Length: 351
Image 1 (tube, one colour):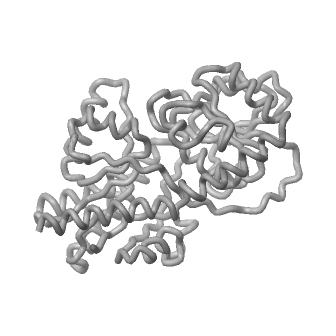
Image 2 (spheres, helix red, strand yellow):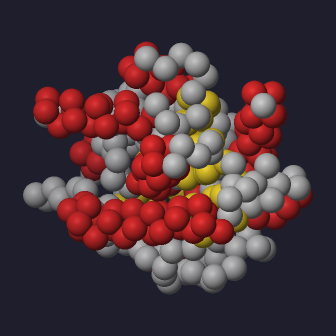
Image 3 (cartoon, rainbow, N blue to C red):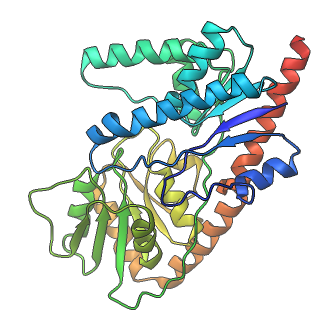
């Protein structure tokens, strides 16, 4: 088995060598030969339009030329692992269609969001339905998504595989000695109007890092942080007392990145209980779950935990333990290695 992993890294953090990363260490331990490609560009933009015009084209060209490299110099490659549809598109165009090369394609972290506009929805569906025909395995991060996509796209051949999301967090020391605050972040599927209503009459400070929420007015105890990425974002998360993640979607997966990064830092998290979050955390064990759309429950949860530091400490400690065991990059990579070995075994059987 010789998989190629298409991983891009932001230019500020690019080291040019991933051999000592948690991801590669597990691959070495599992005795899986691999090739990882680096791309020195960023996908962090304050507006989605800039991502579409600049970030996506860079990512596509990066993957296109690396795919050519695989064909010319790594002919033994038999599994192609990518993290976005833009990275696997060149593999489909070159490997599958033009050269008919038998390479298994694995797409990690597939998410399909519906659009309210009918023609955009039809266009997106047609594109992804075509693309998924050439994908052997698409990893999704909730069980509900796996079932939903099987029904939506009509692929019932175990194409969609559920693996919990995993990530690596660079921990930094907490030297903050200012006024304590709660922290929230993210843009997809967030219910920030509910959070503002919940925090408005409470005596606690709240900081929200997002570029997708521009209210006409905010309570005096709320500070909006726009263009807060990378190290700035991690510093805000490190220094906060507690993380709050209000979600607006009952079925769509969202909020996992902020949830897991908070857990990695041992932060207690108040998060909306929807179909995805209940698969990752349990109430009053490694997080505090509140009903969706319930502003009073969110307000009561914030006030209760801020007045019970011993409960915050217990939940935060267990959250950190849960992250290490189930959601760290090491744990996620082991799950991916098991899938690659299954694909490799099935390939040998086909031969």
